[in-house]
Length: 497
Picture 1 (cartoon, helix red, strand yellow):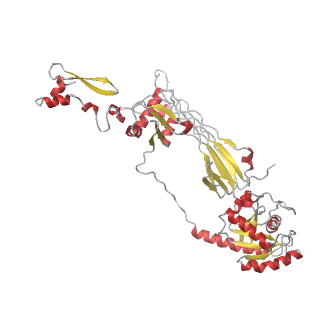
Picture 2 (spheres, rainbow, N blue to C red; picture 1 turned 90 degrees about the vertical axis):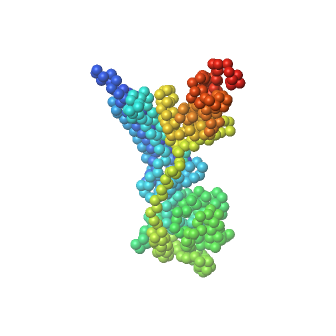
Picture 3 (cartoon, helix red, strand yellow; picture 1 turned 180 degrees about the horizontal axis):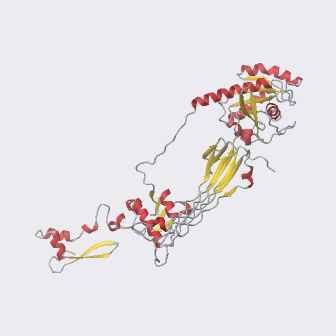
């Protein structure tokens, strides 16, 4: 059974907003006292918060589907419905959140850090909130907005100052147990460590954390062994400490080749080139280990490494090693304090942003997209004609109809609001505001002024337009095709039709 999980998929479903209420105040001797329907309650959010008592994502491994409660519908007598309860989920410090496409959404570092994984839907307005001077008694209310359904990938990256890296059985777990209060499982066979272990180290006045990363082997960056699963836990560290086994019994291994193999894997994984390195030559309590450490120490120093011969078993050299780690941490923290500045990012909406887009499709249909419009559609009760009219008024005021007309839409054109399966499709019936009376003529022209009697005017210069209009009768043959038919009450000018 798994005891440590550092990557899971979370299916978060926020609560739906409650529907608005349609109600009319009724009192004795006053049966129609006006609208008094309340608003629906807000749906519950799903929130992730960093908890210092949580060290693994195991809970999400067993229960990946999480759902918040929905808001309740509004009531009459001006009473709003109760909101749904937010669902708060605890995650370990260092949890990184990605969407299904691999885009990073948040990096939760620091106890108490909060991220809204899925936002609850807004409650619908009741007919009381929808009433106005022009709409005194609305017979409809808005529906509650559905909550967000999101699929997120949670990945844990340990938050440690120092990472101990090395081959299996190099003594990393013994070393972290010797310098901190951590008590990892220790044995003399490969891959004893199956989970990263964190320990807090005190060196003088400095306190820092050390992570024992499960053993790396050649090919770990491509998924061989356990290394690939845990290389992510060294990404946040300030420095790397190579723990090299000087007392290994394997004839084909030595500290130099071990170091080169581990550095090759770190280079292939990427992103760790700028981390300072130091080397701990472990197991000098063994005669062969002490001899090997003395043999390779100068070679490693010539390559630019700080080298510390240590023994996790006898605790020899551990004080020098921990104080060297402390110096690196203090230097890094001092540089970070100088470079760190509070940044406020403002992303104002463009002055020419209408809040929606209209796209003409190849099949002569049109797609309208925009967060506000799509929310309006989701909140509309299409079983209520008055609610549909209210939606049409809002879209017309926003300029959607004018934009459809500019894109070439005509009466009966298929218009799709939104994208995907949640889109709503309807046949467009333009209003006068959108220029419905002009749809039978070319843009920039008006069929009302393109009448055949203008030719008659040219033949009768003695008459002005008003006099001609008084003598002729105009009939519209088809309301969608404004063709003007002129009937001559006299019999003169037979060519005018």
